[in-house]
Length: 119
Image (tube, rainbow, N blue to C red; front, side, top):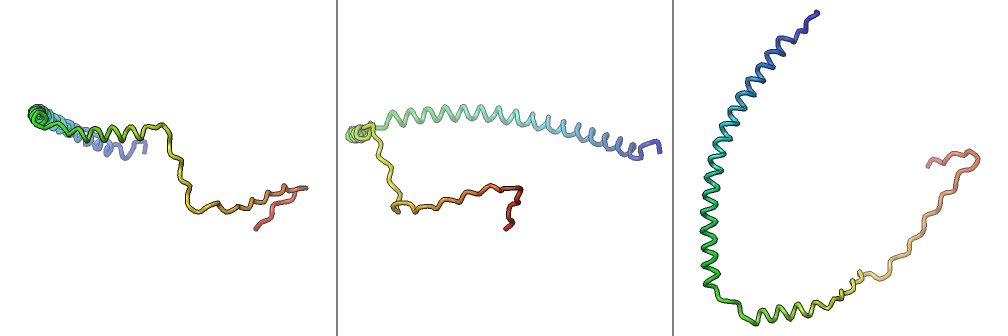
């Protein structure tokens, strides 16, 4: 019994793990190459779409009329009325005064080695 009875099984298991790890690495490299091609294609497409969006926004903003002045005047008046610098006081919660609470009795220290009562 000097030899470990599981030594052969352990060796086979380690070899199977190494084989599986090699296959896994190969598969991950293949997927990485596919993803790289797809990412490059996506970047090109995003640049094209971004350019189209920029052109469309320039056309839209160029044709849009300016907003009427009455709206801008109203916003300025609202901001001026709010900027007084003072905050409103907090509202008091409903219910009036809180009910008084009876204080807890203070425990008396044990004297002459007495034990605490069990309730």
